[in-house]
Image 1: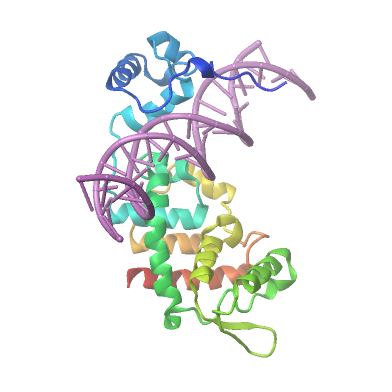
Image 2: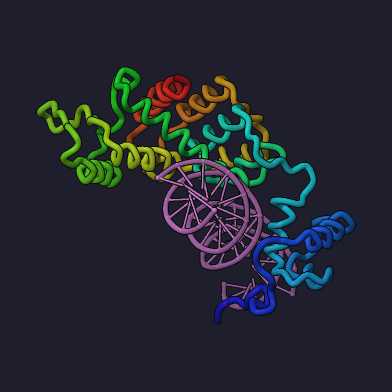
Length: 261
DNA sequence: AAGAAGCACAACCGCTGTAAC
DNA sequence: AGTTACAGCGGTTGTGCTTCT
């Protein structure tokens, strides 16, 4: 037997909130705060809404001191840095940006930042001079492990008639001429925390959750993040051993350079 | 001017974690 | 220990606005 639905779906209003509904919810929340039971709340204030919907409306829109839009460069950097280190943990990222909601950041990332970053990646990938001396995809010592194999296969699948692959004769892939699908796939792989192996570690999340480390968008923070990762052993699903972390950091710094170009 | 396509954002859905019993 | 129900999270969808053709 499954869990009982949180509300009577048939008698629940959906879609955009009216000013009247907002006013009811706001006045209740200002009076009683967030200690209330969200599921029971709509009935108390005479709203034909699901409790979850009320909660979301309050947290993402009606709550005081919420900022909408107008993300600063500094905020962009924080979001990018955190996304690259912990992935799509929007609530944790939002906790570092006072006044921002996870939903807002998620939307901003999906609609703008991702494209901006992708553009920067194009710049980075079309300019081999920016590449690290040891390409992390070129000489993966862990082609024997599952991840390496997967990546290798994934690259093989991506390489089509449009690409030019130079081999050193030892089975090592050299320069892969960037093409659109390759870049897109690469960025997907690279930014995906599972793929690049930068799944968050417990202490890292604890630090972020507790907001013990103020993160800013400065170069120092980027270095701080890089050092943090370099100091830790690579996760087992990483591109490689700790060596790869170093490679990643080098690549990350090059990327940072590319990003700023 | 009108329809199509793209974009931004609000809201919903389904799942997981966890507290209470 | 198992069950239930709520809170919270992240992915996805829907909708309205803007830009393009």
